[in-house]
Image (cartoon, rainbow, N blue to C red):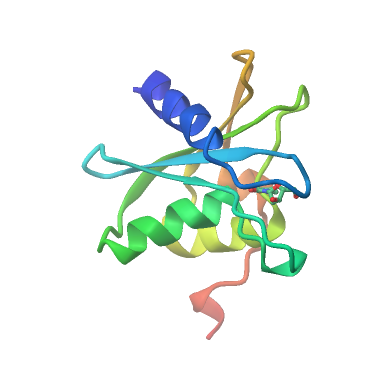
Length: 128
Ligand code: THU
């Protein structure tokens, strides 16, 4: 199952639109029914409009009515595995809680974390 999720993240990375940074990222988000929702980074000539792979995957799934998630894999070509950026950690916390995050590169290196370890003391609905 982890292999399937990792393969999906690596495949999604191939669709990255990253002509400016040349840094391609893929994400694969597994829901409670075992379905996989993928995303890649989508850049823009107006750089600040760029959207990360993780948020594309989350927003695609949310827009299809999915609300329960179990794991997310993030694929990028770095030897020190690429973790989600701060904005993506916030969005993952909102929709996925303390989800398992599997980082991977194309050479088969993987490392698993829990979001709470990467994102301690989150701001969320409990403060509102
Ligand atoms: N990127 C992601 O897709 N996810 C992250 O968590 C880190 C950064 C993308 C955004 C941009 O297109 C490129 O990587 C370089 O920052």
